[in-house]
Length: 257
Image (cartoon, rainbow, N blue to C red; front, side, top):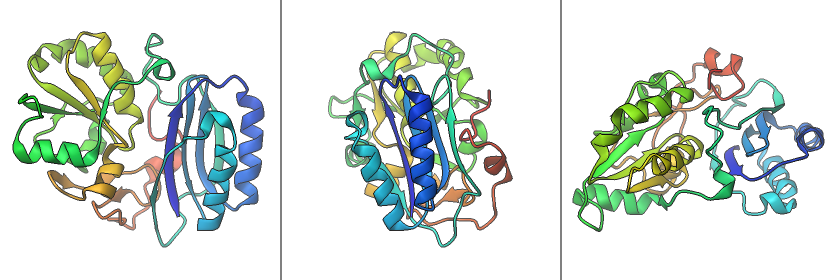
């Protein structure tokens, strides 16, 4: 069983939490990556179903993570090679310290609603939908929503200047930011609102949640994932058996410094 989850929440005991989570994950036979930062937690784990569920139960026993939502998928083989718990400045690096998601989220849109809007060609207020892919360019090349905006960024720290260069293009439109699991598009949506983009939503749960709830509607290709499965099809099956050396060697979920 594979899970992906994150939550923006204040964490002030990262060193202690790191040891607790690492010990628990290892005892349960799990592998993957957990990132801890003052702004929250980000994790990708895989292992026996009972072990994964026991780990989530342990994590949710902490009031800070009681409502943590995990996206689930399955694979025949362990997609990770080791278990890492790392302390970071940000769980997803943007280098924009004014953005604090734990202080308040940007509004979101769920997958069925987004599909309905795309089916009808506009949102419920009649505005054109601008789908903004906040992922790195090589991820987008595996697949994306039909007609999505792709600024060809090489790393997430390039998103703020790209927004400044393109924000006028969003006037009169409803912008829906999206990414793999929701973490990048959440930060991106907050920044866009701070920069004066009027109608901004984040896709709740990202592409993986969309696949889970809607499937392939309005999406072309696969979704790159930072583990040995390399990419997932809209039915959440691994499209390729090739191990992704890039992901294996970069446990920080592929986000370059």
